[in-house]
Figure (cartoon, rainbow, N blue to C red):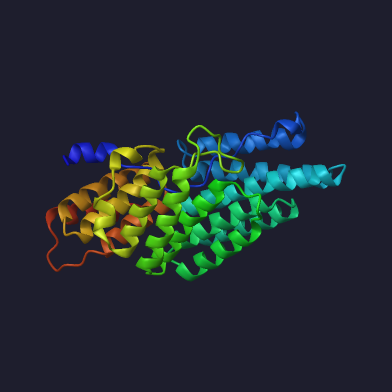
Length: 322
């Protein structure tokens, strides 16, 4: 594939957190519905705004949700506001993750899980636990990620939507990859692909998922797993044109996964050309997550005499301070 075509076709991350859903029509125009719309608005800004610029505003929004919750008139309204608070806390966790602040990300995701349980919403609790599992898998903590996927499944009941199983199987694949288990990762991907193929392409995704979990998402998950397992075939065989979605930060992260696959295949020049492009996006959006992933790609290549493309990448990394 021509390099310029390849660059134009790279994808969004497979299991990135969903945009916050619009409120349930049954909520009318109450406080919970209005506050949820505020969370959704901040979520939509994530793709075009540095997380450092959003985080303080979202935390203020969360404090407002908590204040309103304390004055709620009945248990039903408190439960709705707890769900809204869970969504807002999860967004702060996502922003902290993007900034490379793992301690804060864990704390906020934990708060999101507790709030979802307080809301009495098992589906939301499962989604938040799955998000924590995704975070731990991305951080390379396979055992913790697998524990969280088991907890996420434990929250679900027989009424769960099909997308929950498909998405959680993809998260499980990432967790197994983080743990270095190729066979288990492949099995989870196969399950996710089979489940995704059954999802109606025209059916709206149920809250809290508002994206359509498709087979293309599973392909992107396979790329991410292949990068972590050092399996270039999983990366290089991907249909990148089918994955050309998502915002700049998401594309940068997957581009770094693809770069890792090329590096594992010995394609050093192409790998670091991609990594350099992704790093530019990381610097533009001041994303600690992207910069840290770029550093991980560099650490994986060891030689006493690096070629020029690697030396140039080292210079690019040297000037990054986030």
